[in-house]
Image 1 (cartoon, rainbow, N blue to C red):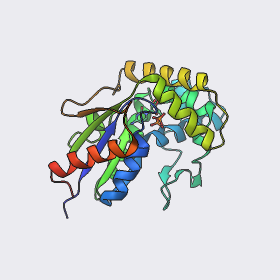
Image 2: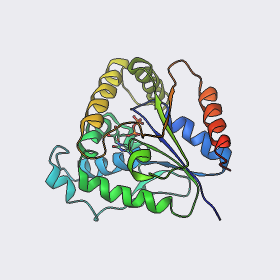
Image 3: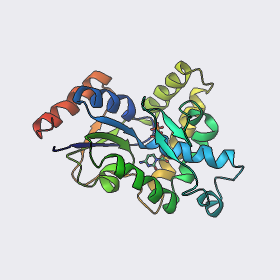
Image 4: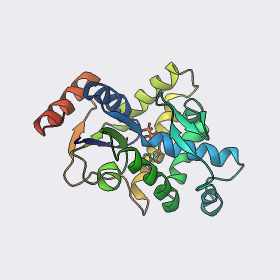
Amino acid sequence: MRTYSIAIDGPSASGKSTVAKIIAKRLGYIYVDTGAMYRAFTLAVLRAGIDPKDEEKSCTLIGKINISFDSENNITLDGENVAKEVRTNEVADNVSYIASYKEIRLFLVEAQRKIAQNVSVVMDGRDIGTYVLQNADLKIFQIASAEERAKRRYLENKEKGLKTSYEECLENVNKRDYIDSHRAFCPLRPAENSVQINTTEMTIGEVVNRILQLAAERGLR
Ligand code: CDP
């Protein structure tokens, strides 16, 4: 059976995961949150008492830990559901260091490509259209102003019962954007044939409809 893939990339808190989840459900595809995988690796590094700024030591966990998703699509670390833990400030503050290490990226990209091998996917991240799924049937680059993204993250965290101020969210969004777009290997940038969507003034429903329309135009089923 022919399978399809949709890549959704963009900066932190640009609404990728909210939209990607809905689209996956509507099309009957699997949703793959690659950011959660980098976050889980970061959690493992912190739990091991390793400084995430220490590349060599962080890389020693490659092949020793298992990062995947359970049947309810929760991120798991060695079989444990860590969906809540990967959202903490400590993980958010350190994940972009971990995501800048090439060996760790190659380890996680291999797992991501394996998931997409035999099923249709909506995969979101930073390098899906440019690297992980270069042949994706539809590539979206989703952006929004830093202030709007910080506001969204602040409200999202509040809903999840996580304590973060708007200022902390804005600082974190800006810091990660900088590191993510300046790293040497697979930096955050739009894929050549991607469609850019600025969601600053759009509702979730509007973004979803736009992507579904693009998918239909390309014959995705
Ligand atoms: O939810 P949010 O957009 O804030 O971030 P995320 O998608 O959970 O990703 C967390 C971090 O993982 C990003 O800031 C990147 O440093 C890294 N990441 C990456 O480098 N490549 C990906 N494909 C996905 C995430």
